[in-house]
Amino acid sequence: MSTEPAGLRNPLTERQCQVLQLASEGLSHREIAFKLGVSYQTVKNHMVAIFDKLSLERRGVLRAIIVAWQRGEVSL
Image (cartoon, rainbow, N blue to C red; front, side, top):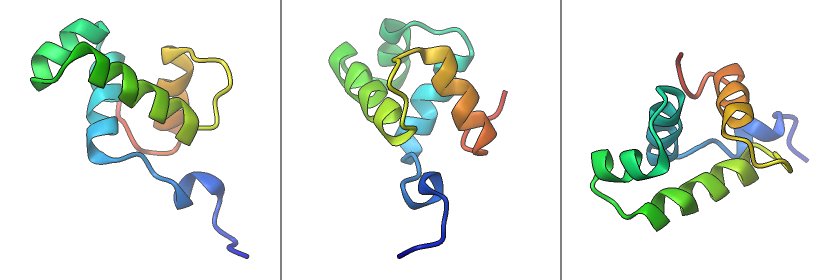
């Protein structure tokens, strides 16, 4: 059994960090999609994966940003 905290065993991908970083800058899902050159649905899929990796039952973007910041995966 690993002694690492769960967050370190399941880090966010580089793209997930990019999506969350842009969300922390106040961009909407549609604006993030445009900026990254992906579809709106792709951004939504990334957000679902982010919430899962951060073990967030409530799907709030602000909460995800705070948790990822605490883990050192995004900067504010």
